[in-house]
Length: 247
Figure 1 (cartoon, rainbow, N blue to C red):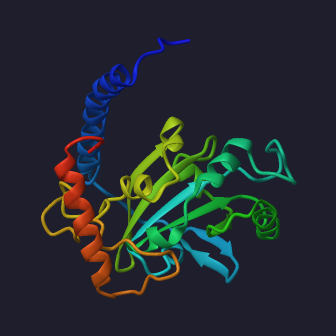
Figure 2 (cartoon, one colour; figure 1 turned 180 degrees about the vertical axis):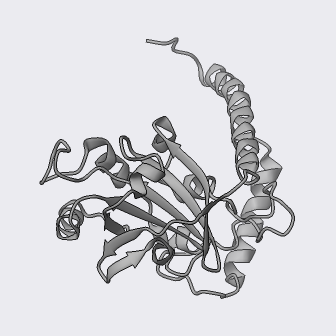
């Protein structure tokens, strides 16, 4: 066991750890800022998927939004667990996916894609309680985007009908994903809050003010006045304490 100490000694040790954690948080923010400045790659090839509405394209996966994150999940014949389950690692990751209403509110959508037939995907989602969009695909999408042999997240941006690949992460990079924040941090527009270091002209709104209940988002609606008041008071109190922050 580690040393057992008094409350004052514990608080002191925690304070020392907090200093290091703040350094890590700021380094993560700086890395996300660099990620928002990465070059983009135009996607010129057509890709076909199948979803609940039938045959769709990569462009359709955006559902009208500007940013798309596609996770290639291994669920298909030959994968351990088939046909009852998807890959254990992919399934564990799917269990981490947060409510997508918050991601959608930032003009972003997450989709899963597998080579299994759509009927099997729908059956698996129902069994496991997963609600993210999940498409069946054939062709070379996985090969072209580095996910034919292993899982990974590809990030895309839509400008009109033109699609760009903006980022890719796999292996342990996938472990950090699942929350609204972690997904937004790998997108080209980021969290879209004023504190972020983003290129000039990128959309940014006041910190906290866009947050909402997952069943209460309305496109284009102004922030709730009461929530603005509450969050301002809370943020001011938080800043004045000048402690307990991982900022």
